[in-house]
Image (cartoon, rainbow, N blue to C red):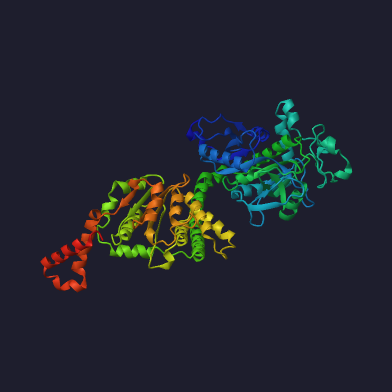
Length: 618
């Protein structure tokens, strides 16, 4: 059988266990050969055949696997190998939920039919399957296809006229089998149909089964009148409840039956209804309580399969062909779901961004960090084009960017352009896109930018604004200080910042003008210099730190303890000569007070020459 031959099968029939699979095979009018082609990722086992005028493909779940996800996998695989399937049936056994209004008994059949505009299957979840356990409804699932519901209504009318038809068809199919199989499939005696009180629970016993342990004491049983035709299954129409766990709790069963109108419980349909629109047909083999046994399973499976067979007899082939392929329907649904999912994702991103922005504002108010961007922008405005390129092209800078826990100290005399050079470096790093760039300018002219505490608050705020894992560290600190109603000491700030840095793969930090920090000395939680040493000495962090300052003795003393001389770079006059010349040249030609010399280039050149001589690296 080729791929083209697979296209001739328009009815998909899914079973959960081998007992149901056997019953389905017995109901075929004609058996076909096994398929010659299956999709590479299709792990199903198939039986092919004809029922009435329909070609049917029957599949069974893997042995030992139950539940909604397994059923969904079987259905998806079937559609890959048999893409022309247009209607689906989920046929097998289930647990009944008898009530005063619905006298559901063993051997009866329940059909998933919609009510009140909802689908015929209720998906629900519940925790431990023990007595008195509450349940949580999750959703009514999709309605079965209309062509199947129409046939259900027609067959309902047919059974009203031919009341023994179902019973006779079941008996006729069973009689066609070998004697030992007949015995297995036959309807058990009515005496074995026992409905126990909901509060009477059977505890499994290794020595005694349910019958021996629970007995037939009438005080534990619910008395029910004998039916007029005790051998004829009754067909019930309504809601089937589906979950990933077996229902063994009579009290929860009764609660769902009373509140939702549930007639039957099973474990597979919820995995199919939104992926494989189908009709669910269940033969009742127990009462969804603790008194389970397998005595009625074979007969119940046959009864459900026979109902499915007679249902297909009522459907003419052209009505099935008129249905859309289930695979095409699902593709359209999945496309719509993807679009909705994309919209939801976009909305979630917006909400997340808003929430993060609110958190940032909250942290900003709490930390009150000074803003280093004012210093950065002022320095960029003073910088002449091309300034600082000499340093960006050095081996020292290239190595600093690559080496783990790298450090550079650039020092020079006052006025040599250290702050402008820092801004040039920051601009270069922003352009080459390091993941996490932080910077701070100490400033004698701004009292809010002269301490270790101010610097750490600023760096923490910058790091928090970048999002990601570091947020939780600062959030934790915020919570521990009465949700921001108290201010943390410097020690807490320093330690939290170090933990934040540990959450980032690479951190780039530029600190300008260390000599303008008033709290350079002291321990690492109070003094800037030892804080720098501690920042660089942990293998749990990867920090690229570059600092600038005047060549002060205390700075040199501490830096020399942990940095090699090649990582200490003096800003010498010959290195910055071009930068100074560019600056002087521009100022001479643009300064308002020197505009009278603009028509005399020779005088301008002389002014430049004299200023360069007097600059001496400043």
